[in-house]
Length: 305
Image (tube, rainbow, N blue to C red; front, side):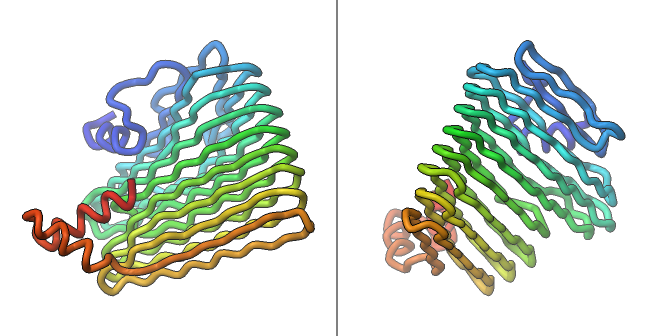
């Protein structure tokens, strides 16, 4: 891997070197490194368009890294990764995509990650997106995450996009069995003329299942954001969806939360708030010696943590 690819790898997966344990690193459409471990097996799909990850029953305290980096302008790819999480597991999966585009052609990475969690399985899934490069070509990412949560399973999902992605449609689809829980935290910032759309569609199918979907975002300049979140309560369940956004400059943000109760014991809540930074917050920080621009940055950084 060259210096640009290594820099992208650090940005999206916090990797400074080849990780221990199981991993699959993809660069410019090809696998450049792959390893399985005693409890985690990574198997390439036919044609090189993705991988299957099998995590054995009872696996604890292990991590799997599957980052993707693109540094070739004009490259377009689509990958399919399937995760099979055995019973009673407790693992962390770190994904993410970084695109560096210094050319005039668009670079695009689309991926569908499908998770199958068996009974009592627990995972933390972290996905970061990042773009760099001074070319006129677009940096486009369209990730889709499909989650099938078995009985009493738990999935914590953290998605981050802070810089450099010109266009993205992020889809998350989930169905939850009895006692299963899904927690999603999205952190997103757009600037310039960037466009970002986040879509969530969660079905609470089992008794005592629950979902908590939270998006925190900042839109600057002329960028546009759309947040669409649907939670369907099909059993005795609890669901909560929330969008909290800051708008700066001439940006545009649309929040569309939707909750549907198909069972009299479904308890569902939605919240949405969009606004500019409060003037008194800026003034307070300026009295401590910060400029207005520095005060705004401090507030935004704290908001997105």
